[in-house]
Length: 241
Length: 241
DNA sequence: CCAAAAGTGTTGGGACTACACCCATGA
DNA sequence: TCATGGGTGTAGTCCCAACACTTTTGG
Image (cartoon, chains in turn blue, cyan, yellow, brown):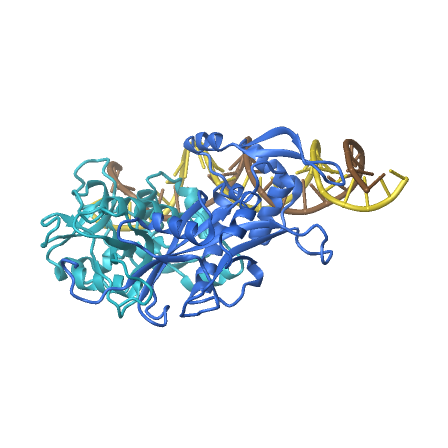
């Protein structure tokens, strides 16, 4: 019982906007189709309200866990995803966002490496599915609004923090990295300028490996050097695309 | 009664970090004292826990009001402040942030024009007081952490959104504006470059008025043209200091 | 040998930095 | 006339945008 409060209390949930990046099928359906797609992970609701519709993974916050813990728990329980980049997004508290009773939700967004998690995420939760962000089904509650805010945040954050690497495999080519930026920011970037910029930052390590199984010259693989980035950041360096 | 949840529920509050900018006393106490000070508004608690300590204005969210409405209501009830810039900051949900029971708080930050609100804010709430941000008393709960996050957000936001004008009188001099930036960002800026930059943005209107009651050449007054800024923003213009 | 993507340098323009002196006003 | 802040221009540097061809590889 609350010690200073006699009124009815809102309920509290967490919801997660889980972003993933997926390569298009090898056989392109149309010549101009983009080679990468930004996707989000949705759950089909099997309880009212909005039974049968799609919704963000999430659920009630328990008294013995922090908000961050609640978000990670729900993500694990509903999608099998663990140990990913997860950050608080915004709290949504309109009075009628849940048609039945008052529910405030603290929204999070997560970035998932689909090269690592594709199988796992697909099997752990049979009612979970990845949707291209440009072709989302109707969403329950105000989840479309949450997705919109999450997408804006991702676009903003991507430009001034090196979080894009969370969406790529550990070893990636510069072209993959560029396409990631082009896909999320919905903008075209100049190849030479992009490479100069990112390599001059000195936060990538060139590996002695190249792409495999491509029908043309194989590209060099790189990985993100997180330690180096931390050091540079302490010296005042600012990541910026 | 919640329809899908049988567990104990966290309580939900809002808290507001209210920023204001105040000119130093006319008689400087030391020659190098900064001419502007960033302050925040605190409330002395008259109930346990932390009775007698200082805390952010805030309180429980009611079922019939949104989070934004709750923040504005608490601000009005506890400090008399209304119709100010108010934006959600972050939600704090560590399990033991309240020593007695589980309370999650959605923190907001507000920017107050102290030239307009000084009197009112001082009288409406006898237990409210403005503190220089560099000389805060010990705060209740995790409010020092909330203040830290709010300050970082203010510094960041100030650089890429024209929100600083909220802290100044409607008519201000370029020097006042520059000092505002120097105070909040804790950095010195070059006078000529600052003026060129801000005037080139074309978001200020030069008034046919000058400063009054100064013992030297009076500076021209300007005001922020919000409408012009909106138009420029739509065309892709990005404010940046 | 052909298709497909990898990889690579230069140049011009715009924006930022650094910097010092004269001006207007009131006391 | 003096003290105080108001107001102004230029030159050098750096960063960014624009831009096209050669190389490598597998099929």
